Image 1: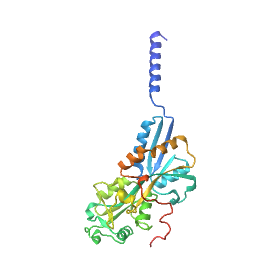
Image 2: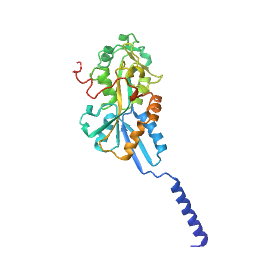
Image 3: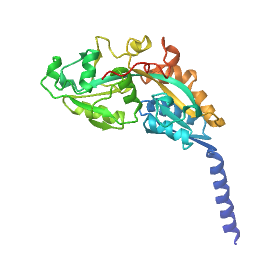
Length: 288
């Protein structure tokens, strides 16, 4: 090899070495999946965590609460994000999992603004979703057919809405969607449509419904005047690795709890003036 080629070889080798040294080495990765209602918090926290910990890579996916819980139990992911307690999910050995309650989310019924209705009674809400009331005119609104849009089976948002909003009754058979964002888009574009979403997804294109004069607000959730709310859980196996523990600690840090969570429209667990257990609301038979 000529002297010139030898110098070029060593120059290229040196540059490659420097570039490799400057690039952060990813030593670990975490995969989180589950609740789409909870996803915005986790994504924002993961972005800031990745910036502070370039050696780690936190990957956030959706899929719904049922998917998150089942996949973490199977060991397919590190953290399962859920709107429901694992013990409420059929086929899950919840004793194998550790529950980390990170935040609280209010859930509101939403309608297309053309419905002409802003407030319903609790009994009217149940009647709408069980198919007993089928036109908004019956509630003082416009002459529009009520079109129910459900979240898919396995959705934590759906489970909590049926449990706390419908007294445990199942919503009527209707169109189902797996994504909170898709539900909002359909309701906004469909006159007469009604569904339910987490508070942070409410925008000016849809009309949230008050129930018996109580508005769906964070303050009413804190005081438990608004009953339709859920914890945002991060489930892990009982034995976790150092990287998972580090990220969970970050989720409970002042930055996430006091800045990220309120900024995105969620509620910090520490600000709640009430609490719930996994079995609460299950001590009575659902109304028929």
